[in-house]
Image 1 (cartoon, helix red, strand yellow):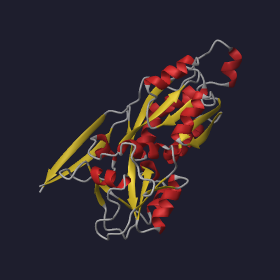
Image 2 (cartoon, helix red, strand yellow; image 1 turned 120 degrees about the vertical axis):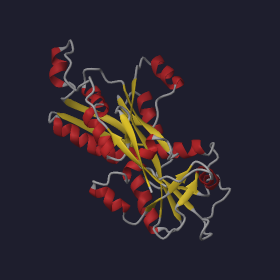
Image 3 (cartoon, helix red, strand yellow; image 1 turned 45 degrees about the horizontal axis):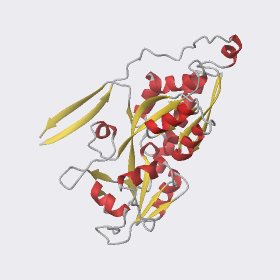
Image 4 (spheres, helix red, strand yellow; image 1 turned 90 degrees about the horizontal axis):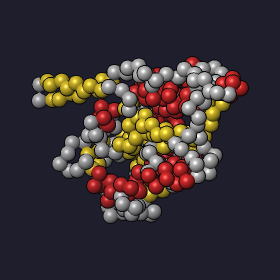
Length: 307
């Protein structure tokens, strides 16, 4: 008996829109609105492909708007908000209460919006026969307790993007802050991780899923040439799943995380207009088409059973 799970996402138009509010200052209304002006958005580099597409679509819809992305590590982005350099940030978590309290002490009030469910993807060289891994085995690898591939017996080289990135923070938390620096190596970006794995048969790459999840994107198709995506199980008694959005939604794929937009820009300005765009119909559709799970969309899972 085989079970087939199909992920169906129905995007419905939400009540909020990116229509312009009218601030009290007429000059401010003329120079910056939800659809006009210039805004710098600090974005975790793991989400770069998704936001390159989102920004291009937003600017196409609103020709008088210019969104300037700054792709940095997650920790650097949070620090930029502390330092009043960033009005809008995109990271893999909401700020905790301690962080929000600190910002309030600096007279900075923020509004947080979860816009998507994302995942960590594990990639290997096509010649590698070890394409299944449990979370416990991954932890043992990251902490240096078991650093060899099961099939070949060769030493594993684990490569991630950068220290203090969202990917690094996820791995650090997963292994209880006991990551072994002799096993784990930093590249300079998610793209360099992919290229490293293509050239090193004994490596395992840790990347943000959206770098390889949009099958309609030409860059994604190029990235997928020369790598395989591992399937992951919660434990030895569980099934193995690859990071498809249906299995992310049901949490059967275990290495999931969120994408949050945190904004302190004024409610009638372009920063807030971009946030509204990402959480409403078009932005949520882009997220779905990128192979991630939209946060604001009604979801129905349909299961077919066949012999």
